[in-house]
Image (cartoon, rainbow, N blue to C red; front, side, top):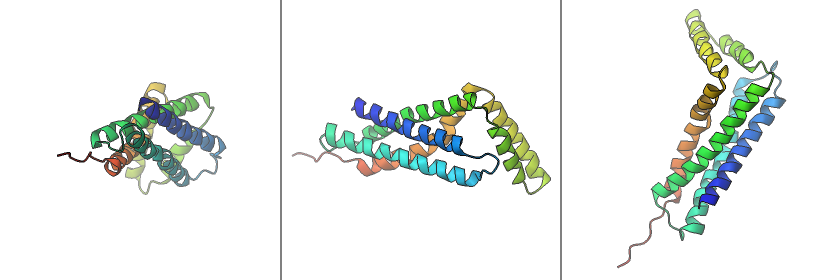
Length: 173
């Protein structure tokens, strides 16, 4: 059971990390459409997180005789998610530290261009200062990426997968 969790977690992290690195490296920051990039990123999350479904089903069918409680299914999916998320967050942090990229400046310009009035612009500038603080510190960058990018989507998918695959043992008389 631990082996399935480890294998699917590693594959999840490698897939999403590789997608992010490839996509980011191939993106022309001068002509980037952040909305399209965000959609592609979340689609890669959904494809990668399908491994949570596969992992839970594998544990249920191959190790637990076709039966799994909601709790065991959720723990299985959660550990797959945490391993994958760790790898993804680490790869983003290393990339961000190693790459000579002006991503933060380009994103800041994009965000400010979305402001409709001076109050919105001031609020966005404050948010961008916060983002600069996070990107400026690799530990904060890792923790922020870990907590807000893949984890929320992964928790929802883990919950759904656990509900779908839970199967109680029949009562014996």
